[in-house]
Image (cartoon, rainbow, N blue to C red; front, side, top):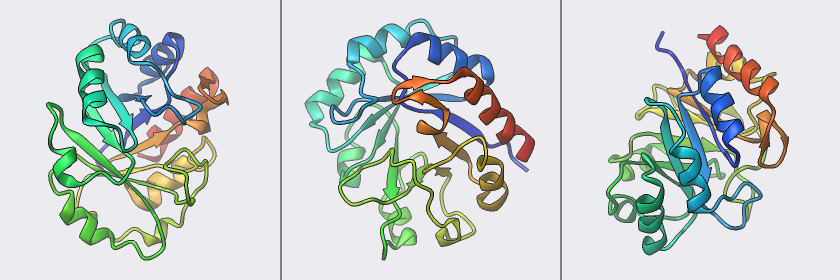
Length: 207
């Protein structure tokens, strides 16, 4: 079985970033969405990113942001990958100098196979729980049985993952990667080193 990758999202502090890397995280996520309690300014993200070791993918999360702002973030941070959590069209997602992943919330009636086809240029599809008016970070788990198999694109599983349920999630869904934010926090935007290590260890165990 292929190894499931791990993305630790909502990074706001250098110490949390370095802890995640030391624990074995493959990617770090930075939230460029002002309404999020985990939002970070581009300059602050750039300072963290400059101090990261090689071979860690940095991901910028956006929600219906202006193209000008996304370009500014790319210039200031040199982020590796874009993650779109809003109603961005495939054409919009494709219009930047970086590869992207598209997040889909598991809204009732969502046709995943159609969405896979629409966003066929994405590096991966991220599936998250649906709550009206909340573009992500709900801390809620959705019904994994709703995910059609086999996966028609690299699948990133998000939504309410914790140290207690991520091993089961990996075994049931067999995603390319898992994405966690609140599940490894002391408080919103502040990570818990013990939880990060345990979370990644649980993913490794499930592999």
